Length: 280
Image 1: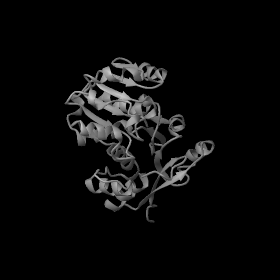
Image 2: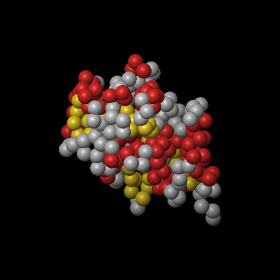
Image 3: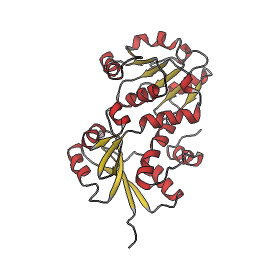
């Protein structure tokens, strides 16, 4: 009897905007795998039941996005180190009778910079704008790569302080007013917030204050070139957009569900850039 097609998913609420089905379908076609990957909108009240019936419904696992990442963390029977450190799960898979929960965002962030700015990990200190869920993964990646001075800047200082307390030594918390002086010797500026997406007047950090060797990256990928990246490029600084993080964070999940570790290629990137209606 032929083996059933392998099935995986992305779930969120809403989830129609997700590019994950395009990424995974591209890889399924590239590697000739009999499988499927689809977006499933699940309301928060229905999420626990959805997870409970995954195996019965033939799923090998899937991706979890907002607002279900913390719920997925609680429902996983085992979790990888990244998920434990970040406190959220974005990838589920079955292994050894357990439902595993992982977090691939830190991997995606680091792999994107490895590809686009290979010496980035030597470029501390780092200033991280924003203290939401995404910033946890970024901080985790920075710590793993040996950056020992990480400065979190957030409008609500208490949120930044929570992350400082969570991650400990080498991580400091600051209000927006301190941004200028914090940038003066920073080698890496990371935006994890929505600030500055809608025009330069919203920029929460001025790249003009950074040293010449600094790298500026934005995990936002719509638009592909955010006002922060445009200002950094105009200043002559190395910039890295956020699309690569989305592409690279998808790699470990695909390997768990479909048994092949896929490559992030220029062809895949161009397909998603075109889907975004963007130009490089």
